[in-house]
Length: 84
Image 1 (tube, rainbow, N blue to C red):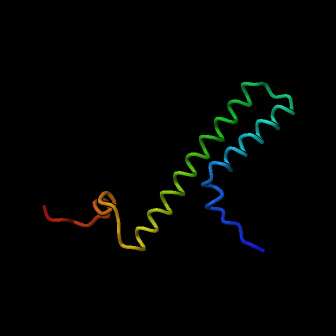
Image 2: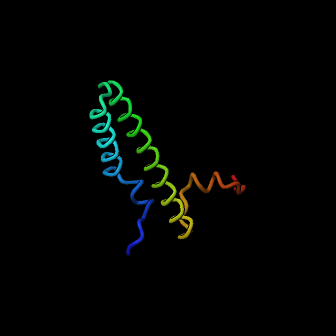
């Protein structure tokens, strides 16, 4: 049995679109109003975008740290003093 790569799943836009569609369908079936369904879908979309961004940045930073190729901004923020 394969292990589920949760980082890849949570950073997938398709996953968050599926979750928003599922929530909208369930809310509609339960008789919630259109405004409630719209608000819940908006929150899921916003959370999904934030999670995807954080995971992508974290994976990118980890890969750069392993390869020793940090971006200039990361080098400046690392606390090292550089000569000017």
